[in-house]
Length: 433
Image (cartoon, rainbow, N blue to C red):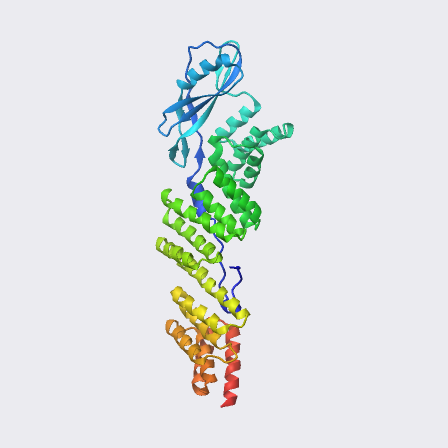
């Protein structure tokens, strides 16, 4: 279904775009801290000269660990000592928010010809890494940018820049740096995923749908979670790919349950998903998800009702365009049944639609107008439509009585256009008496 603007009769209604609030809530609870070495172990194995050995260690949630093996070594004569040191060390688990996580720790050990061993990387990039780990993100950013000027294209430096930018909340900059950094190390994937997700939302707000979707997909590839699928769905909505948006927001909706996201945030996602289903043409799914949003958070009802009301309004607009006024009225009537909160408004629109035809259906117009008035006695348009239907049947006095009520309601609501139309009709009918 082509997404279109509401017809003129739908005045204040507008399709709602998804909100990033759900993503923002997720971001605040999913901050990632990588594993950390708490105490370096010792070794009785002989050290055979200078060299650097990288040992891979899997650190479990409870602090237990398992040495996986050698990642790299410049002197294999030092490998046994490196493995013993890694095996006798202690580690702090990674954390996502306040929850411990199982993650890999890359233990870098440097050996000297005198037999000493240290896990500290004394290189310039090692210094930058330590600045990031102690929270000096601004200093790390300045230093790594200078390093990249002298060493353009250094993948490890680009990852460091991405980390610094991420912690400084420059998510677009972080995403660009991670793009240049190549494969993201396992212990930094959560940070990079969050950066891509936040960048996707920023691009979407700037109406750069292509960049938004690209960033959203990278976020999901790195960290397939509630937050990243929500960001991708938001990006796809901004890019007008409503079917894909609905599919990914549906994944976020499912993950929201398993990740124990708050009811309010789940309602936000459901509201966005309702809009995606509407624009994808799946009104049944939209109504189902919209009902869940209202149940999770009653304050979401207004937004959901606007989205659903607009669906019926847009359908009627297309019928108006080809002068199928009776069919348009029928769509408004369906909407009144589907969205009780908007029923008075939609019945009044249906009544007016019946009067647009070359041969107005005055009886149906009056019936719908009466339903609208019964639901909302202040509905000026309903009084106006009822009056015109009576005037068309030659019931001038009754029509004038209703026009007076229409004019009072229009003025009270501040609807100058409707009031002008009503007064014109009153003058014509008064002259015909």
